[in-house]
Amino acid sequence: MQFSYKETSGIKESEINKSAKTLSPYLDQLTVAAKDTAYSTPEACLALVNDNELLNQINELVQKKKTPHLHEVMVVGIGGSSLGSCAIYHALRSPGINLSFYDTVDNHQLIQAIETIRRVAAEGRQVILNIISKSGTTLETLANARVLLKVLQEVSPDWKNQVVITSEPESKLTAWAKEQGIDCLPNPKNVGGRFSVMSAVGLFPLAMAGVDISSLQAGGKDVDYKLAAESAAVIYANYKAGKIMHDLFLFDKDLEDLGKWHRQLVGESLGKSGQGITPLVSIGSADLHSMFQLYISGPKDKFTSFVTIDRGEHVRVEEFEPGFDALAPDITKKTLTDIMGAIVEGVKQAYKKHDLPYVEFHFEAPTEKEFGRFLQFKLVEVMCLAKLMGVDAFGQSSVEEYKKITEKLLAE
Image 1 (cartoon, rainbow, N blue to C red):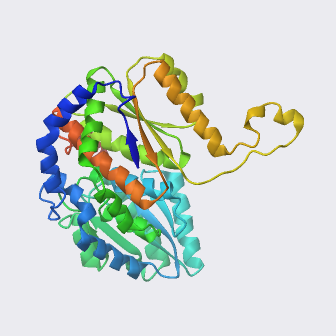
Image 2: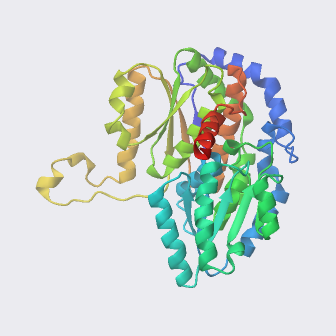
Image 3: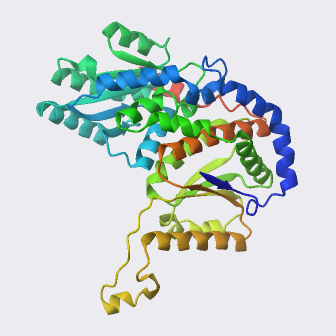
């Protein structure tokens, strides 16, 4: 993964260095936390990439659950309990066992899931329900889980062996699973949902889908914390200059869920005490035809991270029919990759012309290691950004407000 910012961020190097120097003691703290596999602090989520015991535990359970009759893994979770695994699964275009994600209360989606469970059982095959809730009490997750568990129980005498619970070791959900003899994986208490992608929350379903999770971890180990801190300094300086929105502009449709993972990370980590950066997700080139007008000629309140990837795909635009070819003659014999490259360069030149700040991420290949680097880089970045803004990156007390009101309404 390549990250560049010095010529395009709109911030003087002296200001970046000043913030980076301020962050130096915190980077030392993060380096120590990255070795703390006891997870004694929230920052110790960075140690997940070094937790060999967890990796072994996940791999053992994968070997147990990945039978020849397995058709699909249904991930039942919301927010940080599903966004990370969903992002990597789609980014890698994983060719193995299918993963499906149930991350909201939606009748249509659950009806389809019910039909799938019944059809697969009738064919003599199986699904695995991976029910994920850090607290073990997430309302939406438990609603979806109860519906799907009931159907699974009806169609399979061995239903308990088709369930995996991922939750805090001391949660009531874990306690129920153990009473039932259902396999469990731990979500460490100090590891919040949006920081849990490298835990069993993200790694178990990904491993079931054939993702090389050890390579994902290896990418996370290979992150330059100082560079991530410099990225945070760039974002912070632009924030102070009025750039209160951060657009992750992804030039690859299969990276859209990576943008949604980043959206939660930024939104929940920094939206505190009247402060915050609003995270946006744009997809190139589709959103050049829906949002580019605003980005170029609207208020200059946005900071952009462009993300590109080399997938090694080269579909060529061949000659077709003279009249049709004449509509866009310059694309003849060009590959779609060539065309997208020209589009990206055109966008960057337009941003420069209009004095719009940006940084660039480029994935050299669609591999576990590359995406592991990006995930860990962003975790370090947002921790450093919170430190510069003077907010707690790890709490999200405001989220509880709607939950309490919802519970009261349901109890009436």
